[in-house]
Length: 531
Image (cartoon, rainbow, N blue to C red; front, side, top):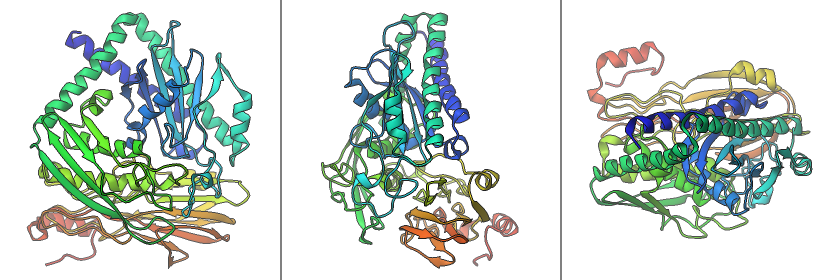
C-alpha cells in the first residue's frame, strides 16, 4: 500500500475508534463515564488484532485483546454483541464491563468493535463494588463470562434483566450499557462508510498495513536501546487484609528489536484484592514500552507484538480463581508500571522521569440503600523530567481520566466538596521539581459506605539524579488518619479527605533556578525556600 493511502486510512480508522468513544461518553448517564471518561474504545480486525484505539485508559486498552479472544471462542455471528467482565476470561476487574460486537457491514465478519467502561456499581458486598478487604472475587460483584446480550440485532431482555437485578442503580446501569451498545453500532456504520469510499479489499489491506507500520516503527525504536538484562523491584503496601508488604520484581531483557519482561520473583497471589490478571500486567508493560520509545507510534497490535510478558501462574500478576482482583487493576498496575520504568531507566535514563504518585487514589462512596454510587480516582503529582518540572495534579501511569467537576458531583450526589486544591510542598525538590499532589475533601450528607484503595502512603515516589522524593499520601475521615485500604460505614456529615502524593524531583535542588523558586513561592506551591 502506498504511503499516502496508508496515512489516510490510519487516520480514518483511528477516527472510528475516537467517534465510538464520543458516542459512549455523550450517551452515558453516570458521571464516571460522561464526566470522568473512565472508558475506552477500539477497533479490531477479523483475526482479533487491534487495528486502532482511542487514546483513553491505558489499563483498559492493553487488555482488550484478551476480551476479543474470549468472544471469538464463542463463534460470534453478525448482529450479535457480547458482554463480559470476568477477569479470568478477558476482563480486568468486575466494574470494567466490556462489549464486543462482530462487524459485518456487508454480511461477512471483517472485524470487531470493542467498548469498555467502568460502571459505578456491579453488585457485590459494598456499594461501588470495590471492597477494600475482599478475599474472593465473589465479594466484588457480578462476574459475567462472554454472553450474548444482543442477537439478530435485538437486545436479549432476559440477559439484561439478569444483569440489572444484581446491581445497585439499575436505571443508570441500563443507560450506560445502552451507550456502549450505541458506540459499537457506530463503528459498523463508519466502517461501512470506509468500504464505500475505498472499497472493502483496500480497507482490509489497510488493517494489515497499519499494524505492520506500527510494528516496524516500534522495532526500530527498540533497536536503539542497548541490549542487556535489567532488573528492578518495588513493593505494594499491604493488600487490604494484612499490612505486609508485597514485592513485585521484573527482569527486562532487550535483545535486538524485542523486549521481554519476566515477573518471576514477584509474590504469590495474596489473600486481598491486589491480585492482577496477566492482561493487566501486560497493559502496564505495553504502556511503559510506548513511553520510552515513541508515544506517537500508532497504537495497535503491531506495537505489542515485539513485547513479551510472563508471570508464574498463581502469582500476584497471574492469579488463579477465585482470587479477588479489583485493586489489582487500579493499584497493582501502577506499581508494575513503576517497576518496569525503574528497570528501563538503567537502559535509557534520559527517557524516564522521576516517579509520579504511583497510585490512583480510589475513592468510592455509596448509599447504604443503593440510592447513589460515586467513584473517582484522584490525581496527584507527576515526576520531574530531566528538562522540566513534573505536572501538578494529573493522573499518572495506567489511568487517564478527568476529574468529576465540583458542580457535577454536588448535583448528582448527596455530597459537598469542602476543599479541592493543590497540596503545597508535596512535590520533591530538585533542579526540576516534582508535580504537586491534590487535597480532595468531601462531606457525605447521608449514611453511606466508603471504600478507599490507595498506595504510596508509606513509601514516597522516588526522586532521581539527586532529586528529593515526593510526599506520601494521606487518608483522613473526620480529620483522623485511616489505613490506605479500608471500607467503613459513615454517618451523615462525615468528611473524607485524600491528600495525594507528589512526584519525585529530578536533579540537585541546589541547581534550581532562583526565579523558578520565587515563582513557586508566589504561586503557593511551596511555603519556604531551602537554602
